[in-house]
Length: 171
Image (cartoon, rainbow, N blue to C red; front, side, top):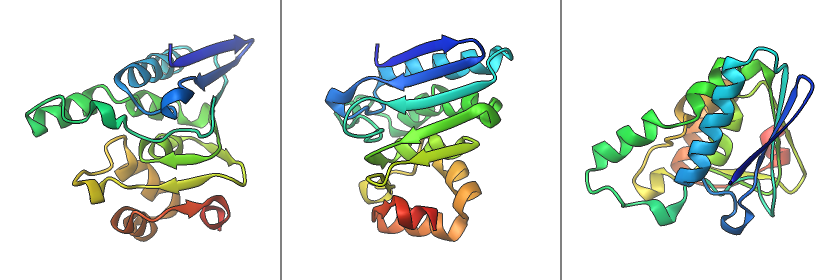
């Protein structure tokens, strides 16, 4: 299972556990996160949620090996939107803290940006490469990131595709 959960009293720790593919948002990862975030949204006895990841980075974003499996682009987008874990994360966003490290690309920053709190190690960096790939940020980044850093900064990140280090992001 690429998503592991451990509960202690009113705290839930969710861990991305697929370091071999840099915790990419594969179908299995997306479904595991949806299940975990749905549990939090339904269970008010969970007061604090901590999300972290195993391996060299928090998440490399969408699993590129799964891109192009659906020939209808509109249908592929509809499927991703219908199964995206962000809709459950948003319902309880004030209970979440994401602990980030290493690369946070695409969905790897789009989902954490919904949370009330984000911590990041000094080696953390953020990037939105979707536009250069002919896509739009599809894990909720068009909403989550502008709320956190503003439209202009989000547009700059998306259009340039350049990486931001943790220090610059904090500023």
